[in-house]
Length: 149
Image 1 (cartoon, helix red, strand yellow):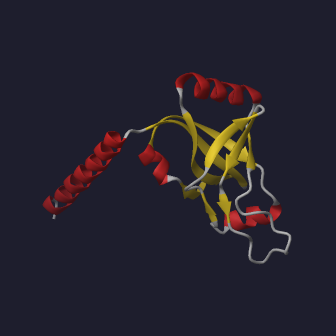
Image 2 (cartoon, rainbow, N blue to C red):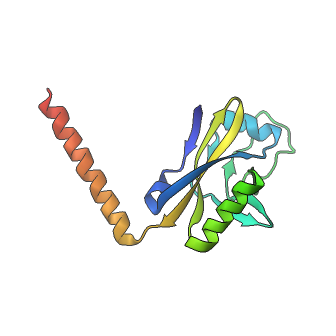
Image 3 (spheres, one colour):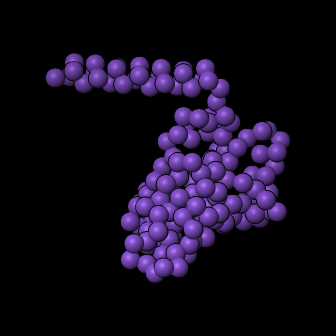
């Protein structure tokens, strides 16, 4: 598995509960651009509409060696899941107030996959607590490393 991009902001803004792997519909030049690492998940989000799952605001820069008919870099891209998986996600999003957030973009056997997470938005005090825990962990790791010298 070759990871192309991760959405670190999603882990900071959301409390992730469950993840699902989905395929993504791309055009030929987009796949080449993704292989070069020119894709960003940072501001993207998932939306359910008419029984289909869409990845919105996902940026893939145009392939520089491609032709002039390159697709829009921020167009909506369809995610490929089985009907039962889509229905299950839709039920969780409607009942529990969860959000679908893309967290990783990677290759599996030359196929581009997106990891989609069900997350609940964190409050401001939860974000502060996460940042505080991160600083404490970094400091303790630093002290352990210095004591081992």
